Length: 89
Image (cartoon, rainbow, N blue to C red; front, side):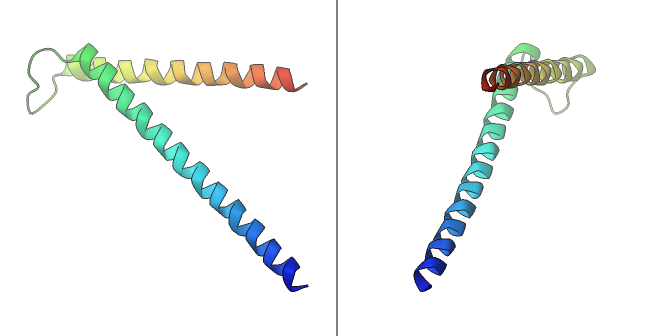
């Protein structure tokens, strides 16, 4: 019976570890996306040297750029999800 308890405990620990790893991977992916947004949108919208405050044109450009980036990412993700679901049936 002791062997069963240890095995069950080890499985629970492994499951918790896998869950924590998945969460950390999601955090890393999110940070990578934010970094990517920053690089792409900064290069697209910033002209000249940055000042202490964004002008309205630059701010609008950055917001639009990030919105398009997010919309595109969601669209691609949804499409892949549909493809996977179709493949599973």
